[in-house]
Image (cartoon, rainbow, N blue to C red; front, side, top):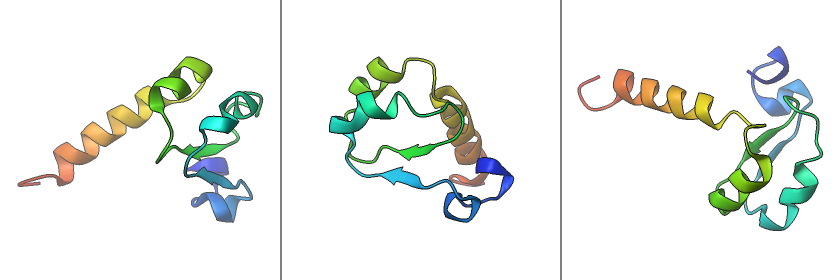
Length: 75
């Protein structure tokens, strides 16, 4: 949960969605842990290069695997 308020739009922290390739360097300057970025149409290799380990990609990956194991086929 972002900011402890649940949905990002209700917590006062706007989500960033869509193609953000041209904004990656700017997004790198945002405060760590204060922004939710949904990279739907962004080059993930470029995002990883810019952000390195400052975003929680591993936490998202682990959560996705857990959710799939719990609610996936037969779950």
